[in-house]
Structure formats: structure tokens, C-alpha cells
Length: 536
Image (cartoon, rainbow, N blue to C red; front, side, top):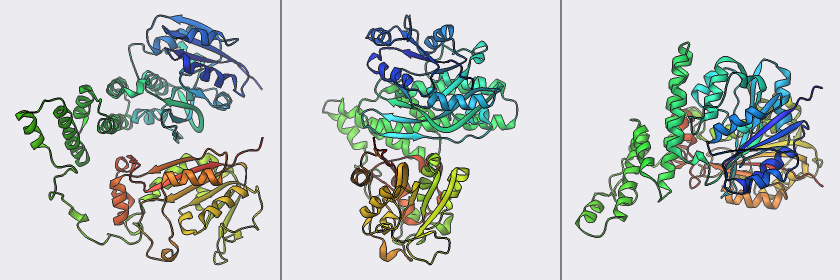
């Protein structure tokens, strides 16, 4: 098999303390024919020392000009048939180059291939997978937003840079600008395999939200003269709306939780709020926060007292002025979890989780009750589908038994177990998790969802509805039952979706924007991905 040289270009500005992690991730690649180029963008730390202590690393220095200029310098020196750009504070997974090149090798027409990634939050230690499925119409989808999200997840062919370079006049979103230019003219591909880890820390340019929003809009607007048909124009309009809505939510969360906000943050937020009801509520909340901030800077006196008098009581809206509307009743709209109103709200979180982790649904898979999720998310990766049911009333069940006490199920049997919204119905739930660990093969994956804030069933499950969970309880449980697995546990929901779920509203009655906003204080659904450790 042809094994061409792949170049990895690493621009670095004062990130010498993280650079070795990036370099080591390239050294660990299962793909063996690589070169590493470090472009020092005017660093004043130990970047040069770190780079040159690694045998074979090619090092180049330039006075500080920004990451785009640094990448362009790398393009003047690279020798590979393909090229990857890895930021110095991020790192590649071991199979990254092999996976991306395998796609390019199958289709010589591809200009670049992109994969998925994990967001790694350095301070909290949280890891959030970002897995998108984009089977076709890549330019249209890029007009709607940057579905790639991380530059290191992209592998380009060399010939791309005979025509294109990074625009060094752009500070932020320069890779999005390049994706759009290439995808408008050439064939590209996106796959769901996770390629790299995107580390979030205090020095990230992505923390400068006004800069990122203004640059994203500028980059997208540069495409307007090139739009060729109504579909592209519609995608472009949707993209403008999506970028504004995304960064408005980011700014709002930042301002509400940060006492050291800037006037630029406020101006950008207010400028991009539109007239929707949810944004009107956001505007009111932001203005209150701003007023409180001003009050803290004013000495006691008449002006301070006047401003304080203008503030509503804590717990906006003011006491006695809450408009309950349709929620002004003591009974829910539905006692069927919203099935009679278009489907349950929690299914959105469950099915998004399974979609993001669909590559784990492979080989021999066990699901509880039925195998609908197995077949939908596993498709041609399934070699055998098993259904576990507590009794023989299910004619499709291949295994009968209680998963909390199932010695008849053999050890190390399954590549994947799907256990959605079931654990709360098992009194000895810890025993059920021990069984899952025992019957999974080493390297096998448990995909688990549990309820947090939820109504209790009015039907067949009412008498066995024992538990609700939180992300903290699930992390502790997984530490006890899946030793060495480093389980990924995430809560989903917010006060609106929790209230809607309790009242029995249907999923179609909420927008994606409302559903996608997560507040860990209102956990509707908790998801868990746990991989059984492989013995050394």
C-alpha cells in the first residue's frame, strides 16, 4: 500500500509548556511516515528549546504575526503529500493520521477530509465529544455553520495549497474561511471518527467571543457574492442566524457567571439580540446584571439608591408579577411523558447521545427490551443483536433474565450494551452495573442513560420507579462498578426543558435552541459512556 509522507505543521506562540504533548501525540501515530514542522510565532518562552530537543522536528522562527501567517510559513517548507495543522495546545489521537488518510486514499478527488473531536476543558477536566454526521452537501452545511469545529481534525492534500493560503488579515475563524473557499470548488468529506482533542483554557482565542462572532460573520459574508442558487442563499441566511444565536448564548452565559465582563461583551450581545421572546427575556436579565455591576462601582448616595430602587427583587420577575400562563395549573398537560404531544422531551437528549456515540454500537450488541436503537445506530456494524427481557413475554428476546442477577449470561460476551432509561427501575441498580461490566468484552462500551428530573410513570412502571440520578451520583457509581474506565458522564437539560418535561409537553413544542442550552442545576437526562478497561 502506498504510504506517502504526511506533514504535521504546529504553529506555537508562548505555549512551550504544552507543545511537548502535541509533539508526543504525533510521535505516537500508528501511521509511520510523518514529518513535524514547528513554526515559532515570536514566542518569548521555551518553545524553541522544547521543539529542538525532539529529534527530527524541523523548527522555524518568525516575528509574531499570528497563526495564519505561521501556517503559511509552514506551507513554504513542508514536504508531505498531505498536511495537517495541529495547534500547540491540542493533541491528536493515535490513529488520527491513519484514519484520515484512509479516506483520502479511497477518493483522489477529495481536497480534504475532516473528522470529529473531543472538547477537553482543562480547569474542570470535563471531556465533551463533538460528533457530527454530514453525509453530503458540505458547502451548504458549512454555510450554515462550521460543522468541523477543530482544525487538527482536517487533513488536506498538498495541491490544495497551490491555489489557497490562509488569510493572515483574519484573526480567528481563518480555517473556517479556508474550508468555505475549498468546499465551494472541490469535493470534501466528513466522517464521525474522533481524531483529536481540542483543549479549552484561558489563553484560547476562542474565549474572545466578540472577536470570534465578528470574524465568523465577516468570513461568512465574504461568501455572499459567490452564492449560486436559492439553496445556497437559504443556507447562508441560516448561517448568519446560527452564528449570532450561538455566540449570543455563549456571551449570555459568560456575562451571567463572570464578574469581570467587558463593555465589548455587552455591546456585542445587545447588538445581536433579535426580537424573539427568549432573547427579550435574556435582554432583561443582562440589563439587570449590568445595572448591578454599575451599582458596585458607585459610592453610597442618592444615585446609588435610585439605581437600586430600579432593580426588581431577587428572582426576576418581581415578587407577585410572575405570569404563569398555561403553566398556571396543578395537573400536567399529559401523563404519558408527552407521547401524545409528539414525543418525550428526554428522547432528544437520549438520541443525540446515541447518535454521537454510534461508532461504539458495533459487533455483538445487547439492548434491554428491544433492539430498535441497536439496529438504527449500529446498522452494518452489527454482527449479532441480542435482546434481554426480564421474562418470556417478549417473543423477540434472545436472553431472559434480570440484569441485576444474571449469572447465566457469559463473561466478556458483548462489544456494546445499550441501557437507556432502565436503571431507575432496578432496585439493585449497582448489581446491574456490575453485570454490565462483567459481560462486556475488554474494550467494550456501555452506553447508558438515566433520568434526573422526571415525572413518575402513571402506567406499568409506576410500582417499580425507584430512583432518579445526578451526574455526581453516576460518576461515583461508575468509579465503583467500572474500575479504570474513566467514564464520560454528562447531564443535559435546563429549567425550561425540565418544566416542559414535568408538564408533559411534547418534543416538537420546544426549539433546538431551547433544548441545547444546558444548565447542570436542572438535569433532565444524564448520559454515560463507559469502556471496560483492557488488562495490561
